[in-house]
Image (tube, rainbow, N blue to C red; front, side, top):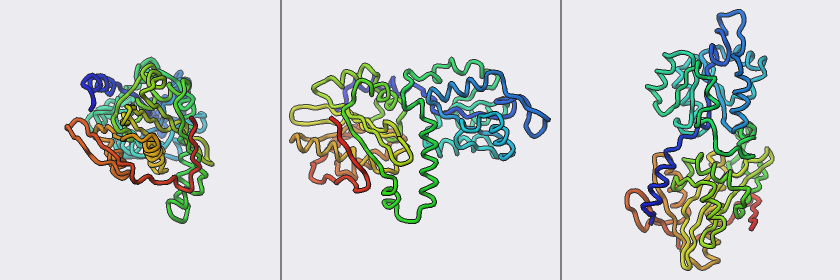
Length: 356
């Protein structure tokens, strides 16, 4: 079962706020002036540097602005900033509605969003409707890069290209919408290459980032520091596995992490998580069945810890579909076990590699 010390440590770590997306207003925020009223608008001082820096830190950016979309997009393009904003919501809806839409499209929690606006009314409306969102007045923009929530501990290779990976996702989604056929037939066109390997020291920064950023597809919600992960990596009693995925549109980066505690007669999955961006790609099933195959070949029992929260029910369902059954439930956590009698093969449309 989960120790009291583990629960206390992870409870503290879960409280760490991580901003994944900054959503900007436009008028008198990114630029001085009102686009539809003033003859000319000009960029706010240092705004380009701020946008570029947030992007380099792996923080996605979007727009929530009451404006005419075509005109506003044209102005962003003129300023050379259009490519930095994903899924911009430029319309006459409430800012709260636009923020909900961005969160839904990006598949992130409201508490991972910061919203910047110059209008006190708009900020108050968002605070009232979506209290989890961090609201920032535009007159505080100069301090944004120094805020702890805007400073991830590590800048990984994945974070540096995060926006480009999202752009690749948009291309995939557009291709999927236009595809005529079944979901499996579409997946077969992607030429997916899925790799699971033992985590190396150079993977640990991204591994820590995954535990901090991944909330929905996360079996326990545990977060681990670089040093803790390095301990597990070197421990004879643990297996730390990291997964990556690429296809014909490009790399998804490192998208999965597994921590297994190994006893002589049993293995316990302490953590299994996946990036939300690969939810529809079926790779979670591949990860789970690979762990089951490893346990079976080592002739050990396989159990898993699951800590439910308001967002990770999908992972509980994934365990149940994979044949795991509950053996204990103490409200805060669930213990499941798999008898390893049914291990599914890797789908034919995925090239699967294991690197030891």
